[in-house]
Image 1 (spheres, rainbow, N blue to C red):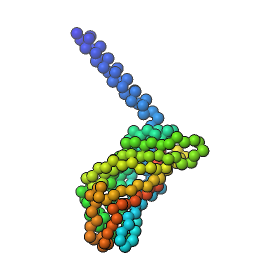
Image 2 (image 1 turned 60 degrees about the vertical axis):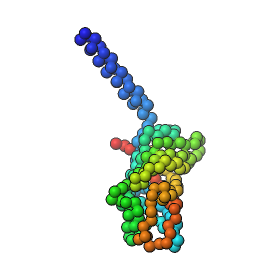
Image 3 (image 1 turned 180 degrees about the vertical axis):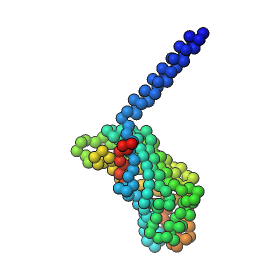
Image 4 (image 1 turned 120 degrees about the horizontal axis):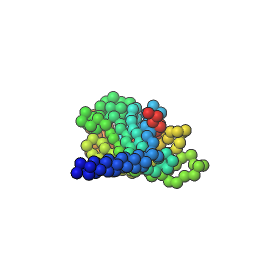
Length: 201
């Protein structure tokens, strides 16, 4: 009986090791990249009755695991933008913006990618057209979104540029009166130019 138990345990351990090795093999081509926010830009624009409001995020973070050869398989990716790092160069307006986002309760805007598909490219192309799908979380609202980007190699790193349109009502973002303007448009345009650096750690 004892010998049979030992054989069963040995068999189960062998199966477990095999599963671990298989998982490692599946991830062999995946590499981790992180955003270098010092070499990246993220800006947003919204029209108002009086003028266009422009703002930017000064610090943000993100990482992704993907195959640098195909750019088509994402194992996981995220971007996080602290609301406190966003400003419009107007202190009164920024205070209203933080209230709109309920910054104390929801300090971060977060995007979780679950798909990253790129068109086939030849070696002559400097930029590759891609499409990213994921879940955007603003305040306590989560929405599935898809938007186009272009990706280009910079040595062992990648630059990803794109633009997306976000509707304030989709995330229950109500403009507070302290903005001091009559009307703010529903559509917010977000433009980004981000450098993703190979993680050497």
